[in-house]
Length: 238
Ligand SMILES: [Zn+2]
View 1: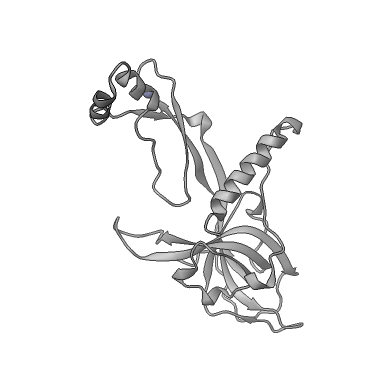
View 2: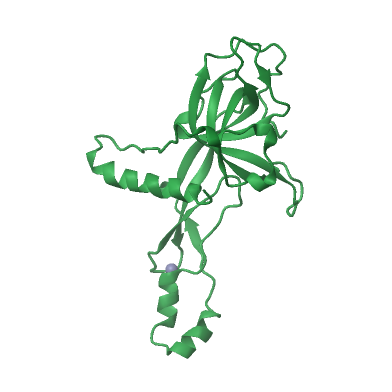
């Protein structure tokens, strides 16, 4: 399951490429996971660092959520060199420093054209650094939202018991703002490791576990089973 992220990205690309010609209005298809087996079931409170990149199902209560946010999913960089038309696309990752492209391959080829193999290798090391402009019209943003979630153990009519800790899950696109505080949901999610969002120095080694949600099923009507829950509008890592 290490490559689930990559699988989802590639599968969505294939899906969209295949169906774009049938679309009346341009839209984007989103791939979702559903109906994982009992073996994937897991309690949030049992998660540890060794679980990173793995996929599980969690029965949860949503105790808080942020307003909808956006993140830069794909950036387009146009080479700024005179006469060069190269545009590089870079898929960005959530909550990471924006990555920019390296050497422009078109410009590099212009500098190296006509050189012999040994000369090329030497010249490659001294290529001038490419400059880029971000191409605003080709930036792609994705809507995301952070949910604060806790374990629930469904128990007939209630009272349902809840877990010890508040965990953070990220949902995107069609899931944003669809699940209000108080929703009882089964999340199919991969465990990711992230920087503390408000770290105060660059090389802070502390990490938090964050769930990237790939699918959601409703467990029940919004919870009235709980009286000792602190509802929050802040993400749990604050
Ligand atoms: Zn260039």
